[in-house]
Length: 515
Image (cartoon, rainbow, N blue to C red; front, top):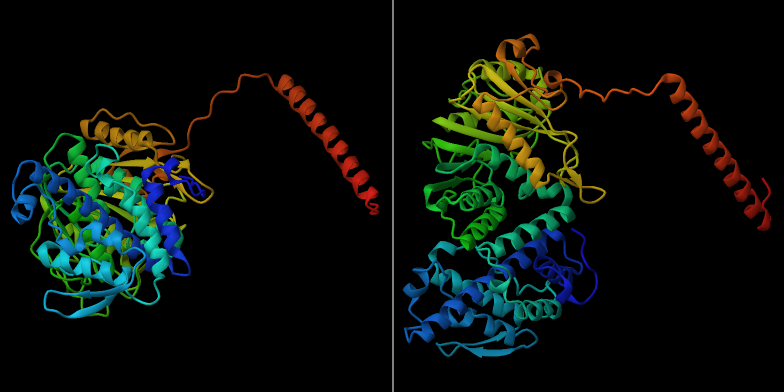
C-alpha cells in the first residue's frame, strides 16, 4: 500500500487521505501519541457525518431534529450542538472567548473546542463514557497543524465513500496498520495483521454464539468476526462479544472501534491483567480468538500456582504461552473452538514442563490443526509464529491437521508479507476437507496425522515433520545435454564478466586510478 506523497489528496484512496492527515499532524510527536489524536478525529468526523445525515432525514420529515431517541433507534450517536462538525470547522484557525450557558467566559482554540466536543458526546451517549481522547488542548499539540487536519476532514464526507457500512472500520484498520508499521515492536499491544485475523476467522467460522478474546487489543478479532457474519448473510446480533485488555489506552481504542461499528461488547468494567484478574470468570465461550503476547515472562509471581485453570500442568513463570492456552481451554464451551497465534517455540519446547503440557493437550484430543506461518507477517516481531486450532468436539477424532504455509503470502514491501484472499481461502478449504474426511495429503503442504504418529515424534507439533518435502518436478533433460547447455551459459557469463571488468578498469584509468 504505497502512499502518494503529493499534496493532491483528490487522487488518493479514502484511507490514504486520512493517513495524509496523520502526516500533517505528526511533526515531532511520537507515533504512539498522535495515533490517538488521529483516530479520535476519525471517530468525531464520522459520527458527525452520520448525525448530519439523520438530521436531514428528520428535517425533511418535519420531525423533531433534537429528539435523541430518533437517532438512537437507527444506531446513530446523538451529537450535541457544541460537538457538531460545523462548530469544529469554524474554529479550525480561530482563538477567542466563549461564554457558556452559565455566563462563564472561557478562552478557546481548536484543541479546546475538540476536547469540549468529546466531553459533550460522552455526556450524551453513555456507551462512550470515558472512551474518547480529550487531550487535544495540550500545549505539545501544534494547533496550526491540528487546524489543517480539521480543514482536510471538513472536505471529506465519510459516509459517501462506498456503500460498505464499515467504511470507517476499513479506515480505522488502515491507520492502525500504518501506526503499527511506525511503532514497530510496541505495536504488538494493539494490532494483529488483518490477514492473520481473517485466517483465524475463516477457519473457525463464528456464525453464532459467544466470542471471546482474553487479550483483545484494539478489537480486531471481534471486528473480523462481525464482518464474517455480515459477509455470509448472517445476523451480527447472533454474536455475543466478550473481551479483556490490560492496557487502559488500548482498551479505549477497542471500545471506540466497536462502538462506531455498532458492535456491543462486554470488555469488563475496566482494564485488567487476565491472569491475575479474570473479568469473565464464569464465561464458557463458543469461539475464542487471540494473539497473546509472545513468550511473556514473569507473568506468575507464585500466587497463581494452584489456579484451577492449569488442568494440564503448571506453565513456567518464564513463558506464558501455555498459560494463555490453558486459560482459553478453561473458558471453552463443550462444543467450543479456539484459534490463537503463538510463537513457534510452543510447537517443540520440552523445557520447564512445556512438553508435558503440550502432550497432555494432544492426548485429550483438543488440537485440531496447526499452521506454520511465513516470516515477516508482523511489524512487531520477526519471531516465526504458528496458528493453533483447538476444538472440544473434533469431527476427525484422534487426528490433527498440519499445514506448512511458510511459502505462502505476498511481499507488499521489503519488510512485510501478507496473505492474499486466495491464500486464506485455500487454508479454510483445507480445514473444510479435513473436517469432511475428504482431505488428500499434499507433500510439502498438508497432512492429516493420527495421534499415535504424533506420539512417536514426542508430541512435537512442527508441521514440517509431518507434511514432508514438496515433490520436485521430474527433470527429463538428458545429463549430457544439460551439461552442454549449462557450461555454454557459464561461458557467456564469464565473457560478460570480463567485459565489465575491462570497462571498469578503463573508466577508473580516465580518472587517474590504475588497477
